[in-house]
Length: 294
Image (cartoon, rainbow, N blue to C red):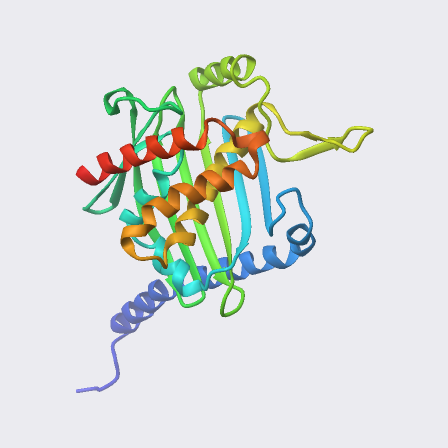
């Protein structure tokens, strides 16, 4: 009997090897792409309107909005990777946003995050809209992490929600984070956005500097892209606040997170101020207690 493998066995082995290599190759490509973006953004990281190494970009296409934040953080990659890989950690992140009233992490495959989203003030959970995200760790290697959250449907004909975070190390103490926040919208959402922007949101602006006035003051992005930029930044600052509290004793983390999130948004008060500190802290303490009760 021949000891050489059959042609069928060889084909099966090659196929199995190819399948095994695809995630590794894709991860290496994604890591290289993010490193290249970090290198290309060197000047923007060094000098920008945020006073920190951070770049925000926003795009609008027919029926779709997407915001991207690139940031250098003073956290080692291993810690960031550990912090962002668990679904329950993401509930602790997302609850920091003004509009997130509760988040529950579910089991099963795919893993789910069930969010209740509502207004920017305290409200009964029954009045909030439930938004169901599937959660997946797309890649987790010693040099690259990618996490994705996606939801098919949202309120007022919004759809195809995507939150993606990818991370690579710079050195032993620093990492580069890229977070994107995107969603699609239909007619009802377009009408709702335009109504908001012509009333309560008429004076609100985003972060992109479109031009400068003769006195040097910036003219910021307004309208739909300004709205997108504000929300993108709020979600990124929630990740940043979570990481800032991660090394503390467990009993101290929640309070540190809400205080850090509020303080970081107030650094950009022209864009992000919505309520006073005590009002926000009291609202989030109540919502986090409700979240812990299940």
